[in-house]
Length: 510
Image 1: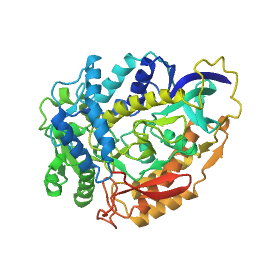
Image 2 (image 1 turned 90 degrees about the vertical axis):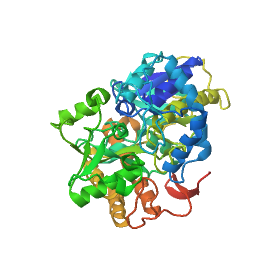
Image 3 (image 1 turned 45 degrees about the vertical axis):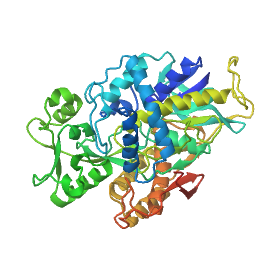
Image 4 (image 1 turned 90 degrees about the horizontal axis):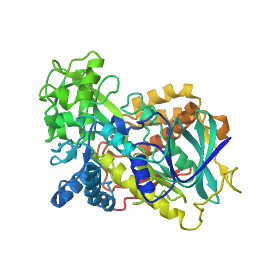
């Protein structure tokens, strides 16, 4: 069995992982990134929207208020203010790298003014990630999936990894999870194949806390195959029509097509049920092909013509606001384990993410978490950066068992999640889905005995169980979580957390 060693092991090579690696290697640390899929990987390359940066000091307060408003009382204001205050420094750094941001910002849903900076039209995430990767000196191993974390003396000290050549043991001074979300838990999603919640499951197995998994944002406008139509299209003039050809969003919200995503997603869901379909008319956008080349190409590939007719759209699972609970530095509470990006729950997004705040969070928290992990290396319990050749596990260290499920059982779970835990939920349906999820056999197996698909299926089943429990316990409608049987928002804002098997209610910090 092959062994490797490094100071900082980063799992995931999206914006949070790569930007964190750049920060760590600038401090002279040995960094190793593992990517489950070929580069450019993760959800970042799929991000058509840009990065939301405050325009100036005065706009910082407006951006904060937009974030708080979208998060429906669950945004931790201290966290949000901290991230937004740091944002201008990162924009300056990216510009100094020569990344081709558009000169004029765009307005997207939930924003009170144009402040979203795009790259290459609707290829923002792809160009951002490629630009960062081009400046990275640390190795990125493609096709490597961590299936278990290594514990030594109560501290995370590496990972057991499946590689194209077989099992691999990586010993590290600390581990940074940047593995993305859980969108593949749903049958229709804008997420890439690898979005199976691996990092969340790994962290939970190591003793970390999972928080607010019930808050899954459904993007309002996806094509029939799940291809995303950027919210920026609506910011540039595209309008939503029902099957009768009526524009309907002004009836649901004064901001119309630029209302927060949870509002638009529910409106699209209702109009589809009421009239039989919803369509997005892109024809009001000038220079559509040049401004949104990815959107145009996705539509044409399906035999749809965005230049001549409105496109059929439906909500699709898009972004997980919940995840591994962390502090302002990305620390999970488990020594040696950090998290950043969509895998983490910092409190920045609350119950509903404000458009294009996610790439910003990935940048800020990716750097913070990586640097905090390096500081952790120099405090007890200390792992020397001058290790000799690694010949085996350190004394007392062992990989945790891996979670596993027969992947052939996933279709029934996904169907239940789509039907019962989608844009609109009811207690009865959530209960039926939870009963199914609890009947499926989630196994703990030695990491050397499992493959990629079994581990991904096991991660999704674990997260489905907690998501459904939290959705049942949250007997209110708040942000992306809408209960038809409890349509009102409760008076008290609170989080739901899972550590071990227990799900408990925790007050919002403020």
